[in-house]
Length: 304
Image (tube, rainbow, N blue to C red; front, side, top):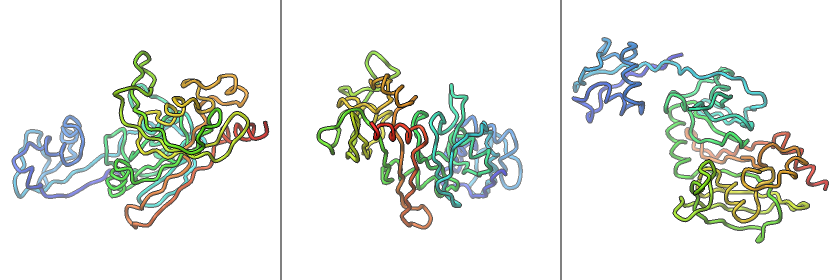
């Protein structure tokens, strides 16, 4: 169902062309705002607006945002971990992207929620509406999507300011020494393999904290906390200290071991989100159980 908003013209936008003003109000591109105008979704003082209209001091805007055209691809195994009027948290399976984008035609979290009848806020770029943070396609676990405008603005800021507690579990090769520690090493594009990330001089500041939860034959289960959020940060940092995630052949893990464990991806899972609820201000903790492939691999290692 389309969303309609009524609002006076903000003082700072009086005299602006309506397409430029809408771009600043909605956070959409100017071309998308022009499309909204041409489609008749923008009215000023009760009449359809023209693209060249300049806004006056006492004008009243009526803005209708059509439902986004989201690719709907049902996803098997994407369980709902938490759901209320503001937020939904899913247990994202491996192989599912947070949202659609260039070059990605597979399933998405947004698409699956749409297929299940969930209404997501229209805030954010059209292909990323409701997305307040992301997990890599190859990483499973707890991922939040905003259903209300309040949740989108508050939680987007909370993730940016790193006030959300994000806990990962990772099974790595070998036994890290020390058993608990911090990896503080900059991350950037690999100098000769641009499709990979690496610890490099001049990279972006990156800090990873880890604690060993369990030791097994040739492997360790770690709890990992991220102080920063760089691309592939856990995978890169653990590989850099000689303990790549088990199954992560992309970053140097033993492919034979991965095959023995039946792993087709790295053993890495976003196991917990902890946050202050944007509306109630109460603390909320959501945990995501391990998916079957990671649980089987862990049990195999424990029995070795």
